[in-house]
Length: 164
Image 1 (tube, rainbow, N blue to C red):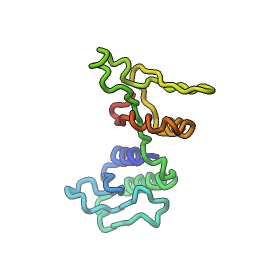
Image 2: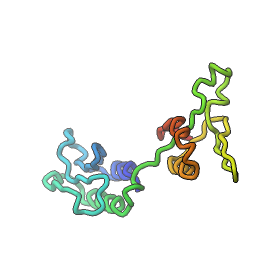
Image 3: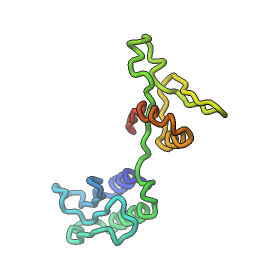
Image 4: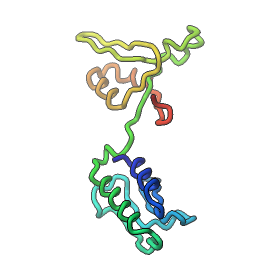
C-alpha cells in the first residue's frame, strides 16, 4: 500500500478521522479539529512495526470506534508493505532536443519515444513523449553504463497528474 493510498482510504471511509502526510510522518487527527497539532496517532512513513508509532490517546475524544478500527487496519497494511513500495515510483520523459520546435518547426524530434537495445547496438527512437518508469531507466543504465549520463541529462520528471 502506498502512503497516498492510505491517506485516501482513511479520509474517504471515515467520518471522524482525518489523515495527513507531512514532513515524513503520517498523522491521524479528529476530523473536526481546526488545529492539526493534536494527532492521536503519528507514524513515521518508514516505520516497520508498531514500536515506532506514537499515540496521543487524549485526542481520541469523539473518534468513532469503527473509524479507529479502520485507521488501525490501514496502518497495519502499511506496516506490512515494504518501505520502498510505499511511495509512488517516479516517472520521466526523456527530452532529447528541447529546442526542436525552433530548430525544425516540429516537436517530432523533441522526445525519446522508445529505447532500442540490440545485440551489439543501442539507439534512441525519437517521437511523441513516452513515460518511462524510474526502474526501467535504471535497468538500461545498468546494462549500458556509458549512456547513463545521457539519460540523466534528458530526464524530465512527470508528475502524477501529467502522466499518460
